[in-house]
Image (cartoon, rainbow, N blue to C red; front, top):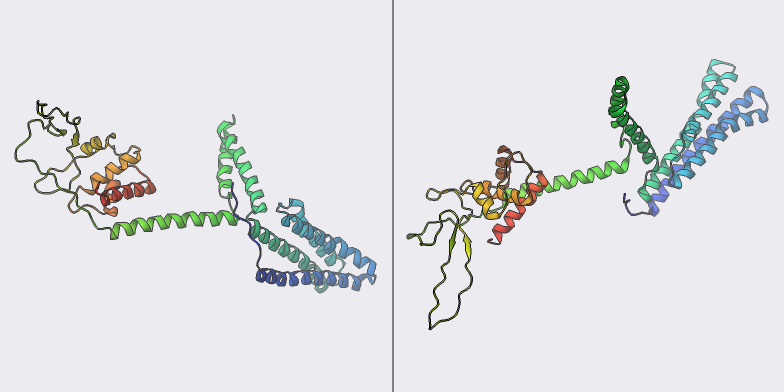
Length: 350
């Protein structure tokens, strides 16, 4: 899988991110200081307070630095690190609530350590976004998607091949639940999907505008000759006759040439419309059949027949609508390319 080219942070982005990180670190430090003050007010011993702060906010700080370092290296964080960022401050909160001498003090002692958790999570998220911006790789999203896809593959195999019917049904249900989680939270996947939809919308708008503003080109009508030639074959081709060789002129004429006798013509009062079978024969392809996959050449033949089924010739939107109503099969992108090929042949006079 190819990744977007690496980018570097601008000077303004570096300054803005640095300013955003300062309050995170500051409020985390204030939470640690608050816990130290709370425990000191109860035990009146600084060593005990420092021990509580080290076990709660100190250990949380170590895990926060680990999270930032792993993120900066483009690696996902283990689950133990993410859980520890919230479990350790929670233990500190419970400790503060347990040693408080009143209900009011218990509430204050319990909420103080949460500042460290919020600071650690904020720093980790900012570091992760910086790495994603610079490298285009979201290791955390890849880890989650890999885990979901691994479980999805297991349950799909279990739903298809397990001998127990209840196990198959259970895995079938679990597979659909896991399918909702594939790609969830992947910023790069969302951006790529937006790019794909943007290209499709651009192609659709281009095709619509081409159908609206394209001037119809009427093909020349086929008129039967006043006197039929002896060598003309009805409904097939006109064969040129080679003059005989005389004594005065011993030059041999070129080989016989055949000219297609079924050009595409619009419907008029005095001309019989050309059928789809005749156009397919001239193009050298099998006759397109509704409901069956068509080749690119068959798509062009089908659109040519539909375009000149009326006078004046149909536009792109009208031809596509007639194409769908007739039951022919073809993707929007392939139909649009076939129409472009048809228009280029018309403009070149082919």
